[in-house]
Length: 313
Ligand code: CP
Image (tube, rainbow, N blue to C red):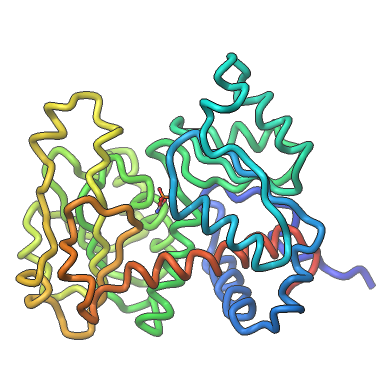
């Protein structure tokens, strides 16, 4: 009898649109197993394997959690965190950089400012490519981490009312999260300044699968939300600094806002935050964004283990 390989083995992870509910649940179940696994057994999952990371944009959480995840499963990492110290500076193309990394590693994590960069890299790479953030387009491993956090913190995803707040135009985590949520039975509220609403082409697609309402006024929905997902205004993606200045600081989650929230609601944020959640909120029971960042290490370890191993965990 031919044994079936796990669906993720040797596959790229480029877009949440390539996932259905069963694929998400498979990663969640692998994450649960990894968290509980005996450390020696866990280190067998990545033994002798190398993660190659190529980060053409700054990162703290995604890069470090990928490295921590690889160490957790017993593998190693090498990579470029600052392209100005790589041969990109001499004019080497993205294609050749990816080609090189896929020679030196077993799986490649790429963050790049251009939409489509990860899909392009996957065509070049001899090894699976994991999209660690592509332009304003997607951040699929963040969405997996976000859904896993919701599931762990609320014990379910279906049936929840989820508010997504802030920069819905340029925030790539927002798009991946919405595509991911469209596999579940949830009510979504989108709250943003008028100029930072979800891009028209995407809202058309998302609305076909998700029940959602849009507003510029956080007060309209804050008391009914189970999950308050806050995002940073993406200053670096504005073509015009003046336009950024018009919307900076549009929403600030302080204790006044927390007092209007449901007692058992949670606040998430992909981070980094600038000033959209005040530090005094960190010690409230609703603040779960640092736990969310920690779950990211385990969801990425699960993804790496699934991509690198033929059989299910
Ligand atoms: N959430 C996230 O992508 O954070 P970094 O930019 O620090 O990786």
